[in-house]
Length: 578
Image 1 (tube, helix red, strand yellow):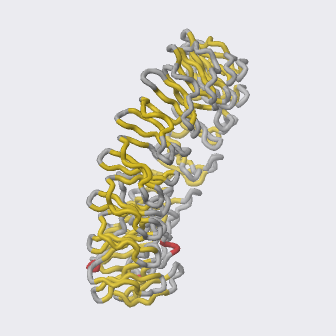
Image 2: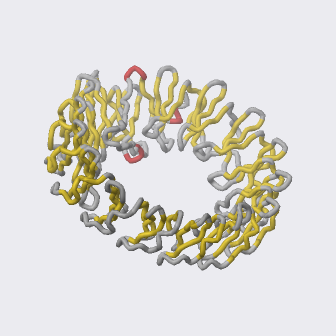
Image 3: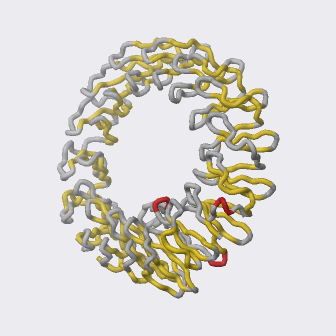
């Protein structure tokens, strides 16, 4: 054991607290809270006794316990002479138990105490707030806590006061100070005092939005306000929000627009009402498409076979099998004469005159690029990639000028001003926005990494280049690959080392049989069957002499050797003293 590496070491027989986050499907909320270990005290062992040190390694709570677990929201569990004690960050003993207990984050203000399967809540000062035996406790966005017992849900406020005991099948999160509750397929609402403001009488209900909620009784929908008053009678098949102020409503057959106060705007005369984009609403009347504005005015004649959402003030429309564009005033500013069109983007409208040839027009319908190309892609990083008549790739600038004739077999999309290009001999290189090769097209593989370095391979050997083509590492490695945590792994003659993004081997003296990422900060190394730990910059944290190493949910690393557990903090710092 290399004690200079300062391990957190814990006797396996004492066990370890497991901090577990639960997913409550009845609330449809994914809750995830992790310990900010770098800002809290860490367990510190002196011989067989445990205490706590700060992030600089200075002792804060003396080593006098048989076991010390991680802090959770300012509290931790320690073991002394078989008793489990809750302490705060000053070492003050708050509670004492004879049986094993665990703590778990429940939001920013709460800690769940699991006492032999019985769950209660404490605040971050260690004061018991909810002492009943619950099956589940789940925080809400407003600081309240849902408690569950025997598949029923109750509610406590942020002061730990019971608003109502477990009595509902489901309690949803609050929206506009009201929460939906459900029991036996009936829905109602409670306010933030826990009072049942609207009785459970609906077969379905939505969250409140702009002071209104859509409710349902046996597939007939209506609209209510926060007093439970009916704004729209429960007689409609569909009521959906278009935005905070507009609703689309379906009667027995047709659709109408309504405002949020339940006022009918258009009357029920539309076959369908779709979404709203740029204040225009796609709609269908008498089996023909057109647009409405937010006041319900018909902005176009309903004469089209299909219309699409607006983009940059233009919407594609189809009539008699051909496509054109209308503006936001409803004018067919570009007549329906094209075989196919695409939405406008950055002032370009890509159009097809037949099933083969594409060109580009501006917002007035004037030709920017003649329809002579197999494909024209939108402008990215000031460049448009095209496929020409001969099926090879070239480049336009943002004005539609050819800056690279048909040259490549393929060009990948531009990213940060550069694109991977494959020439007609199937060799790969890198080109800039002017179409010039910064890395020549002579490689079998070219892989861009997240940190900007370029992995290249030629004749079975790998090297590293930068975006300008400068050699960072020569073509002498059997393989270079990017790991999932962003590090680079270089392999040569069955040995592996970590490489920097500038092509340097971090530790030239050591090689390993294998290196694999364990989380975003660390990699596990294997040598002669034993495991060690590197950070992703290649610095050695643990020599390869351990039986098992694994990542914990709180960001720490758990290490196993000869029946003992040890810990490494997320920043690689450790505390240990025999």
